[in-house]
Every structure is written in C-alpha cells, then in structure tokens.
Image 1 (cartoon, rainbow, N blue to C red):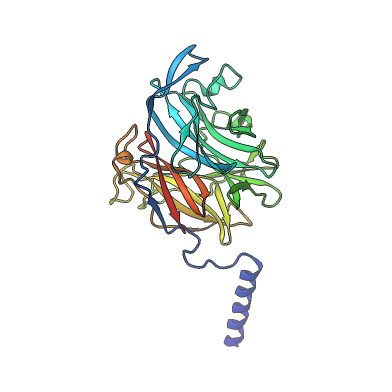
Image 2: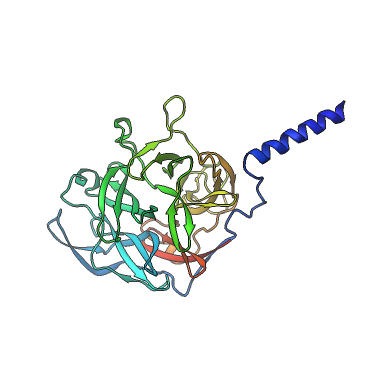
Length: 359
C-alpha cells in the first residue's frame, strides 16, 4: 500500500512538472560573469564643451558638465545607439544620444534628444529633468522609452516613443490612475526577446509586461505599449514581485536594470540593488550598488522562479567608487553586438562603463 502511494505521488509530481514549465537546469539561466572592457573604460565622461540652448532657462547651458551615466542601448541600421542621462551644473537631467559601429567607440550628438521643454510635461520634469532611459522596440519598429520625470520632489515613471531615436513624442505617466499620480515610481524594464540584434517586446497572455519600481519591484501590463495598467492584488494594492533580502548584497533596495529577456528557462531580469548598512552584506559596505539576477516564469511573469545569491558586478574601479554618488555600478543598457552581449552601466553616477556579459 505504501509503495502504491509513493508511485501515485511521483506520478502527480511528474504530471505537474510536465503541465507547467520544465525544472531549472542549475544556474544555466543566469549570466556567469560581467567582464569589464578596461581598454575602453570609462567609455564616456562629462563634457564641459557641450552647449545647448535650454528653452526653459532661456539660455545656453553646459548640459553634460556635471555627469553622464545610466545609459540604455539599441542596435539600429548596423550601429549601436546609446541613450544616456546627462546632468548640467544645476543638476537638471537630459537624455543624450551617441552612436558606434562596434559598440565601443561612440560619437555623440551635439544636443539632447529628450529634455524638459515648455510643454505639458514641464510640471513633472522641471527642474530635475528626464532621467534613466530604457528603450526597446515594438514589432512594428516603434521605439518605446521608459524614463523618469523628476520635479525635484517626486520621481514619476513616464513614456516616450520614436521611429528614428532622434525625435521623441512624450506620452505622460505610465501610472495614469489618480491614486498613483503622485506615487514615487521609476525604472521600467519591458519584457522582450532577442531577434537577431533587435530587442523586441513580446506579448505574454496577449499583453506586454513591464517590471518597475525601486526598493520593491512591481509590474504593469499593456496591449499597445502606450497605455499601461499596474498589476494589483485582490485588495487593489500594487502586487510586489521582488523584494530586498536581509543579509544579502540587495538588502536595501532592488530596481530593474535593462529590458527583461525571455529565454528558454523563463524571463531573466538583471536588476540593480543597494546594500543595507545595518542588515546587509558586511563584505561590500553600506549603500554599495551592485547588479543582481532573477528569473521569472515565462508563462506568469509575476512568478519568481530563481534568484542569484551572488552579485554579477560590484564597484571596483576608481570611476565606480568615486563620483556624484560613490560606490555605484548601475546597469541599464544591454545590446547584442557581433555575437556577444555588451553591457553599459553608470559608474559612480558620473561616468559610463562597458562590460561583456558571459552566459
């Protein structure tokens, strides 16, 4: 009788596994390393010669004078395009654009491509500016950017679109409901798949999905990538899908990195994290920003399947350890270039670094 019960249990377990997703194959789902390309680092630095007429200040400003950091990357027309955050002497952020044939040597545009203007978004963007872009493509070729509008009081996750990466149309806040209008929200990483060198948003259960937030991670879904609905629990509260972990490198906060990548084991989310001074990893120090990895279900994107216990990269180089904010490696850009993953990150909230991701 006991043997019969055992075999029944085994059969039920096998059936459950076959009807859902396959069991994970160890740590094959994650990146094994993120190797800095030191010959090119720092990849980009502040440029005090870059001038731009700001329509809000009504004068020329050195829009890259203070810092350049937190870039996203896309491949278009055989080139790698980097959209990055730059700060002027007043601390106002704008989004700049640079391009490269090899993903390692970039030529910048003279003026920012997304910035505060005298437009309906001014009240949300001035004078903190437009921060931390992440860009992916829709199937029809439309580029969709999530970015943070900051009025120096509240950070709000916003959206813009473009077909050429130069001219952008702003669509306002991602969280449009009145109850979320003044909620601190940022860092939208849309679920995508790789199609050659293109990173294209992919629908799951008939919808596009986005991870967003800092401190805790939440989700939103959309049918067109323009209008988004936050994922809520049965009580109408935002559903948390990833939390900080006491005693770990990600003990103070977690925040999405680049797009979330669909692969055979599920959805890989590279995320940024900070270490708690009181309850974190004692080997890396307080408030250190490192990059972590998490795997979510490809069928139910809100379900966490696995999580790396070791960071992928943590500050080691001088430009990562010293800057506007010290001890920061903040990953937002990832591109498939000549058969390898190039990863672009902010170092010390002041400069941009590049590394190769090894799977």
